Length: 271
View 1 (spheres, one colour):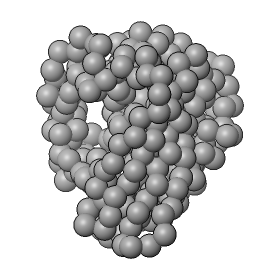
View 2: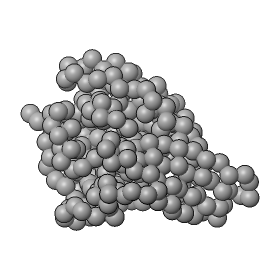
View 3: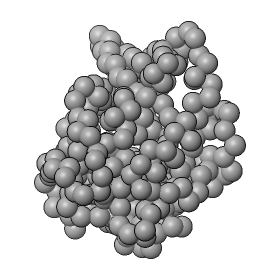
View 4: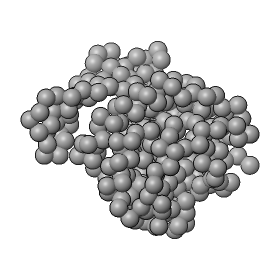
């Protein structure tokens, strides 16, 4: 059973794995504020699923260690623990980790509060998992490079890195703000507006919560989308090589060109 006390991440990046830049700063602040604002209703908007745990069970042995980046409220981590994995989860949001603690009273997940790009836990894992567009939450190229270095230094020799992103093809040609509405369980709705800046590959996302008849609450974040070839380049800089790529957790072939498709990329450390 894991210690339920939330750990603070060691931020020493001098690990000998390459000249990873210190890229913490505005991106982390914006992402943290956005996550804190959504923590209360995150599970209502994005319910948990076992599909990632089912996939990892095909590439890692029972009891294998998994580090999840952006663990949030545990929508992925708790099914991983149910499947028998030893799970550590890092997040920048105290609000998200508080919700995780409520859902994990037995302390099966080891939570870590800290900057993903500067993370140094002093150990490696059989699988480092970055689901649900976590890498895209790094809003600039230097932040994404630093995050890939952090991923690489926590991956055991012979281990796996699994990164889920989205296909940016349709978003890259979007010229007007797009507005969508999502239900928030039985409590209300979330209205999201999305604006795309193709030159920098940034996406500006504003979410407004209408919950329980109360006043609306708005929060905003910035993401930077990645093309699959760009992700491969970032991985190569961190000495990771592509092993597989799918458009879903059931190992569907990835052919690109459709933003409704996810991109599941599996990397292995270079010897």
